[in-house]
Amino acid sequence: MNILVLMVDQLTGTLFPDGPADWLHTPNLKRLAQRSVRFANCYTGSPLCAPARASFMSGQLPSVTGVYDNAAEFPSDIPTFAHHLRRAGYYTCLSGKMHFAGPDQLHGFEERLTTDIYPADFGWTPDYRKPGERIEWWYHNIGSVTGAGVAEITNQLEFDDEVAFQARAKLYDLARRHNARPWCLTVSFTHPHDPYVARQKYWDLYEDCTHLLPEVPAIPYEQHDPHSKRIFDANDWHNFKIREEDIRRSRRAYFANISYLDDKIGEILDVLEKTEQEATILFLSDHGDMLGEHGLWFKMSMLEGSSRVPMMISAPNLTPGKIDTPVSTIDVCPTLTDLAGIRAEDVVPWTDGTSLLGVAQGKIKRGPVAIEYAAEASISPIVALRDGQYKYVRCASDPELLFDLETDPHEMSNLAQDPAFATVLEQMRALVDARWNLDRFDKEVRQSQARRWIVYEALRNGTYYPWDYQPSKNASERFMRNHMDLNDVEAKQRFPRGK
Image (cartoon, rainbow, N blue to C red; front, top):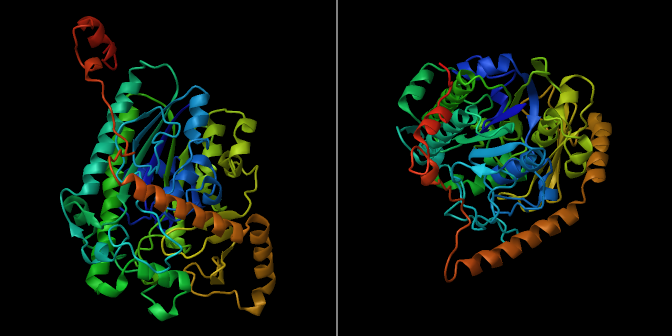
């Protein structure tokens, strides 16, 4: 079975209670949802781009991959789903973003159709030795909120237009069957990631939207937990004044960009249908966005808006429906290999995830879902577990957090000091103690950061050789050239051939 992975960036799962929320203008995603298994409680491996994506591809958390932040190298010897599928005979291809840091810009993909939107070097490395330091030239800031609005072209729109174009062209190419292997095409967009700027046609869809203000208004800075305060500081909130109109415009642009993505995904699915190619389709995001809930924006938080993501799978052997069991993006790797018929024993040693085929069919009980964070706005690693209705957050530098998501879906009440939940707290503590050595985790993060700062500063001296991916096209093998037979070219490149 061919596999099409549709990945978006920073799309919160809170807008996908059972597929896209009814009020979102997303006809293509809603049609896809109707024929998909919809995981209503899927969590990222880490609420930041590069660590989340390394976890999604490998089925391992950052403490294993070493991809702690947006500038940590993804080691080439860690198998990804692209390696497993390619080893089994698949053609593997990526169009779009994956935020690989380091000289390996493929990680099992046989071909990349575009460059990445973010740098591949170590320049975005945080430094636990300098707590509270803001690196002005690359840290997020609230300017994305105060500057929200409309534009017909932006850095990100230009990127995603190209991602969709290249993906459609590749699907037509695959339909012509020059390569007999099954394929796995991963199409990875950068929207609806901030900045919150959208095209007018999509902006207009949400003129009368009743969801332009957060359900939980901004909470005073002093009342937040320590990590949330650090997120505020990392986002330079002191130097910006957010008006209610800024919030409305930011959320409106975010929703508009979801509709933009829906159009792009619809174009891709249309090519798939027109070329009569069958494929398992996976839709997901790397992490979420707080969207002003609690006053927080962007990601980096263990709260639901940031850590929960949409995930839907449409496959011939899966009955469509909603699954409430908490799952993880680290489950993608074993799920795709299971769908491809790859032997579990060839995959299991290299992943901590669980194949979601068994979960969807009610045959497997998924254990507690783990999340890790060790990047900007943290001063030591933060870990979390979602187990049943509870979410527990632990950091050596901060007080514990315990939420009952069944009775408190907006995570307003920390139960860690409530005697009525002492037993639950002890159970969650035991699960964390069994899974993590936080002292060792902290030491490994600090060593990685220190090494990378030395390497980055060294490589910026003298001749600089960038690791950024450079897509190559062999023009001599495209269209018509004199070493080709014209009749043969016309026949091979036509689809369908006999109509």
